[in-house]
Image: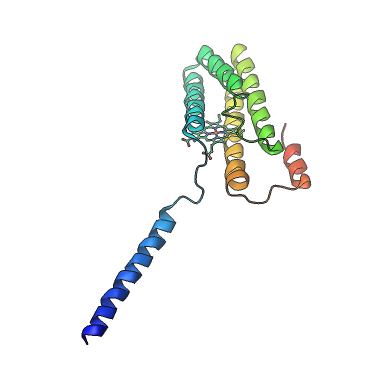
Amino acid sequence: MKRSLLNLVLATIVLSGLGWLGYRAEAQPRVEPKQSSGVRKFMRKKLAITQDILEGLATEDFNLIGSAAKQLKSMSEHADFMVSKEAMYRQHAEDFERIAGKLEKAAGELKLEGSALQYVNLTMNCIECHKYVRDVLVAGKAVPTDAELLAGLATLK
Ligand code: HEC
């Protein structure tokens, strides 16, 4: 009797331990961020500058939009940005630079709608590159085939 009680207690401890492990496994993010804090800081700065663009659009401050776009453009070749040499990553980084350039130009020409359009393009570019980084570079899913890459490139303007 005493023995079976002890077994029950042990089993409970083991099971709750397993449950806790399971919970821990679920609480972990699916993809661990791999980058150093320097890279993360750099990326956060990118976010803050992008928010300046939204502020500039909302207040029709073309100087703010233009200088933010210029800063983003200059960041695109920084080592903290070029964390991967994969062709598709480079493609996203080149798009980033190109769109930031278009945004700077639109702001210089005081075009509100044109600037807003490039802001949307830029946001899509952030999302696409992050998706690529999560799915392919971090999670190690299969790198897209040439055909998929070409199809993807064809959709870019
Ligand atoms: C060419 C690819 C690329 C583009 C384009 C890009 N990023 Fe990133 N971004 C990265 C990489 C790589 C990381 C780091 C991912 C990791 O931690 O594993 C990152 C991470 C981030 C993070 C998270 C930093 C943290 O605290 O972990 C933010 C915020 C961010 N980027 C903002 C932006 C914004 C805003 C844009 C668009 C204006 C943008 N990024 C465009 C590659 C890109």
